[in-house]
Amino acid sequence: MSTIQHLAAPVGRVLISLMFVVSGVNKISGYTGTQGYMEAMGVPGELLPLVIALEIGGGLAIIVGWQTRLAALALAGFSLLSALMFHANFADQMQMIMFMKNVSIAGGFLFLVAHGAGEYALDNRTGSRVALAGNA
Image (tube, rainbow, N blue to C red; front, side, top):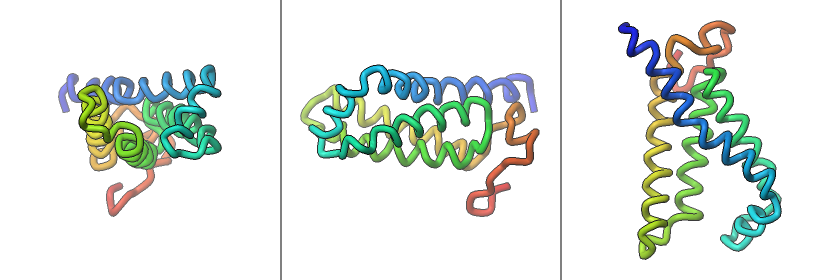
């Protein structure tokens, strides 16, 4: 593997996951507003702590390459669900852009599910890799 391939995986993990960590932290500081928005969209506000935990925990797990396939699968599902629940108003161009952004991010996470975290990851150092559908 080339140096670029070795470095692209950890840099890619940071780039795809950082927005989830930041978003989760922002949901803590804007808890009431986020909860109200969720409820206005028909999503129970009681789910907000789970959303925060998934965004921060899943994002950090992928950044450091720990349980990468499992975290990526969870965030791919979350990205698709949030696209459908919050951004499916295609009459609004901004919502359509947000929908496509979420779908594209889910695609990136599914690539991690299929191929793993790469060489520079805790998965490779702790024996903590989770096999999904026969992938080791």
